Length: 156
Image (cartoon, rainbow, N blue to C red; front, side, top):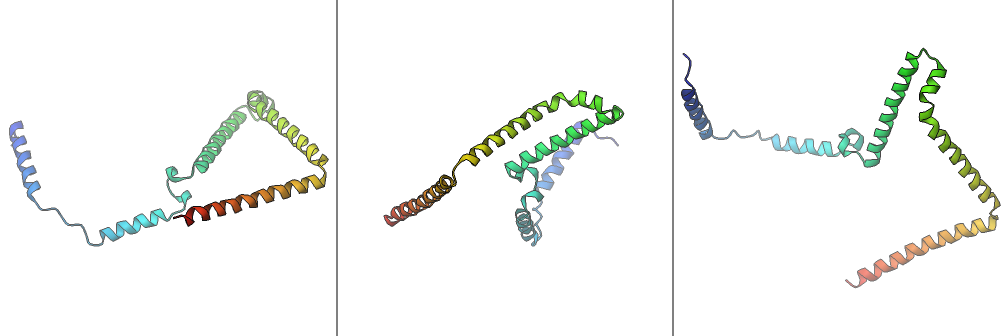
């Protein structure tokens, strides 16, 4: 026998009232220990086994760069395969995209050559003197920091 909509609503309210009067079901005694143990286990995982949002920013950025590079290589390989492994068409399709890498590589070689010439023309005495000066300043920095720390904490 089908119920009328108003009877259906009355039945729903009656069931809702009855269920709300029932006592809450107690949780198992070991539930809290199991939950805390699972939270501790997840917190102890290394960063690469946790979700992507818990990774360090540098690792996330590197992953995205590598992922984009892999997608780019897959697209390039598919174009090369579709062109029948013709290297001429491959170069014409992707030559402009890698021109900036060639110019960047040329700039890097020029800078390396410039640094090599400069380092070759520095007298060894000056070089060792500069290294000694940097080490002395580093030691002085730590000494002054330790002295400042002692003075600040001695007044407390």
